[in-house]
Length: 249
Ligand code: FPP
Image (cartoon, rainbow, N blue to C red; front, side, top):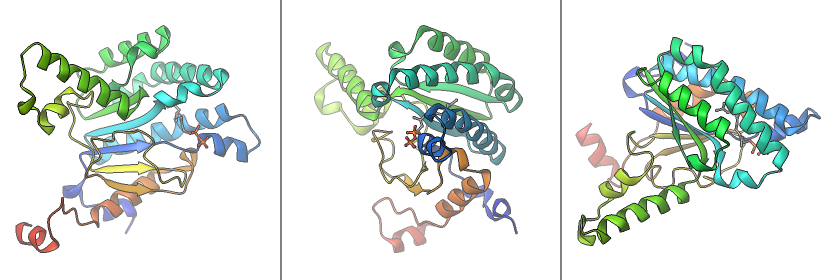
């Protein structure tokens, strides 16, 4: 039985989030510049995105560029932005063919104008697709998102639209840039690092975490299937006891 056949289609995570890590080390290991790793990482983005759509995953969020990544050498930042623009342009037919809608989370104003325009053009062109949402986190950090959510809530309180006593986790959910998607059930990080790196801190409160030693350009469809199988073997208790979970199953 192949790994894919072992996956229980009735227990798929609705939302998978991925920290795509290890492009730089992958390139270095081959004696190449870091950007060579990012270029090869695009191939993995394509494979994993198409694979998730075909499996029936409804939402896939990829951490493509963090707020902190702006402090990388200017040459790498510029090359990454160009790569993103290029990939969005070239891969539009793939997104259309697979009925995938492109969305974005992050600080839009930080992005180069060319990147903003391409992002908007691709989001507009794919807006009616509905097999899967591909959410790119670009110039994103969870703390940035939480700060903008807190500012919006404080503004509503100041205007008398909301009482402090009415603030609940649902209200905070609504103000986050991820509000239209369910929280990810599964978070994958490649490259062997076991950190969250300021990604979806609020939304992963109850996510299952899966760390894979492979560097992102080496991550394959089989590795994705393995991560999903691992997820399907876990008991998600949400603070309850094992007995409570099995009595409601
Ligand atoms: C982390 O590896 C990866 C990034 C910061 C960029 C991810 C970008 C891509 C995979 C290419 C473009 C993406 C899309 C969605 C088209 P790293 O550079 O931190 O690697 P290292 O930890 O080995 O240095």
